[in-house]
Picture 1 (tube, helix red, strand yellow):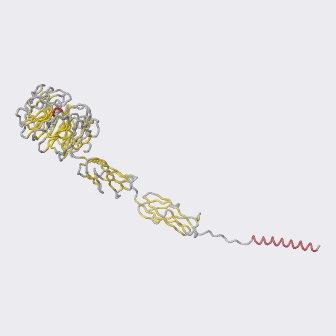
Picture 2: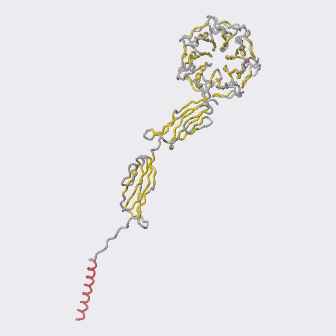
Picture 3: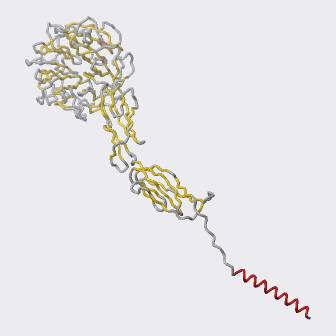
Length: 557
């Protein structure tokens, strides 16, 4: 019994000791655990270039000494120059003004930084002025480039690079000065900060004389070189082929001329020595070189060795005037328009009979006229519409017939079936057919003797062809009158004009000429414009479309 109590007692004592030990362990204190300290702060991106007003979001990474990323740490942001760039509590940087700033991220006393460079606001648009320019070959023009921000504000001081799409036509220097090299078009571009603006530059060959007929128009440049354009079915463009050329193309042969005339599918020019040259159709001997060829695709010398001071062209005949005042004509002669007393065509010049001394010649389609040194007007050839001006509607007797009325003229010219002449004071008188108002007297009544052109205008030069007359009153003031079914008047209408009417557009032509179904003018700068019927491409704008207002002739090829 005693043994058993002893064992039980020991067991109880042991259990109590265990319980006591466990109780003593639960009452002992524990040490707090310290967080791992931040050893480094890295800001990304480390540097940024921002335009004014732009933003960038920065991030900060905290790491311990072993390079382990620490999370949940508090980061504060600051800017070294808040006037240049600000930073939010989340690291969003906003560029304020041009300059530099350092953005700092700090955590537990440790910092990292990023460099911010604020640049000017970017250029949003570039505008070149003027956006179109006409420049004569060899001349210069200054272009300007305006740079603007997205806000629309103009900004200065930005770098601008200039370039040309075709330096064979026009070059441009670093300051925007364009130099015209040769005829054509080029795009001049100004580029700044990746943005561009442009201008179209047209380089033209300035002309000093222009003429238009059927099949072609022609002009002379300042050096006397001839350029023609048109359908060219008979070689009337004079370039050596029968292909269409709907822009001015240099006439072959290297000739220099003092004046040009264009008829029906042929043209003639007079060189400085007074020699006449013709090209195009040779029907009825219109070329005047003594040949019987159908046409000439390049200029051929007119036979006879004459030295002419003036040349005039009709529908199918041509006349030249010598310094002595003698008139010589060649070509078609069915109505006696050569004035040699016959109705026989001639492929060489024949002298006008009558012994008159002329100071000016003007040809209609099938009649011819001249003004003598004393100012008397004479006509010969077809007269059925009264275009001879002698008070009848008879064809002339193949020789000069005096125009009635006793008027004194300085210049004279003829159309399809009418004639106009101008006094030394610029007064204009016309006679002949007037179905379309081509006499300019405000009516459509035909006249067989001179009647005054209405309006009291004083013309410095004038001419007629087809059913149209045109004249220049003063530089920048030109008029046309007559047939307008194809827009020949140039006023934007298709209504015949019975009185002098100015072409629209305010282009200020210094000279204007009538063609068979067209009219053409030159500005003071020598820019050529044409308008009216364009079946033969005589307007020179690269099309066959009629134009009722002046349309610029394309640059020379």
